[in-house]
Image (tube, rainbow, N blue to C red; front, top):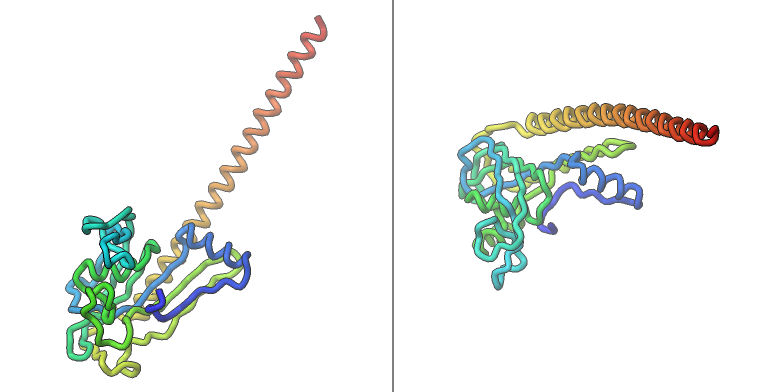
Length: 236
């Protein structure tokens, strides 16, 4: 999504691409985005579950849509986690700074989900129905990326652009969750998940060896039975 700033993963060879792809496929990657959204989000944490599909309505084919929208084709389940960081204002209008975590990777997932709950991302011209045109950019930023490849842990943070020093239009009023604490929480969850995955993998590998050993044992007994049968027939 060219409108989004922040961390970007680029593989320099096929082996690296394959390793990263496997992490994404196995859902081992942790991604977290910062955003400014319109209005003050009431809940401090939200789980957003709207299936997302392709919008086939004339003039909107470049957009995605949530299940139940007229013209929404082939919607697929997806989930996003939202954590409120700060309430404040942007150019005098109420906005909320949030941390967003997409648990799937649907096209425009975060933009569609924020719009669906009535809090579109500031500067998102497309999903504000062409109303939000005054900000100089869309306020969505890929802040944190963690990819636990087999050879090394890739973990990066792209500096937060939504601070008053960078954009004086943004004025925070109240802190709900500290960004550093929230990211540490995600890191801890990712590490626990990784440890659980390794433990499960070890169990499966052990079980695989047991099954293989049993198969070899059964194969040996079968071979012995065949041999005994052959010898019995030969003796006659």
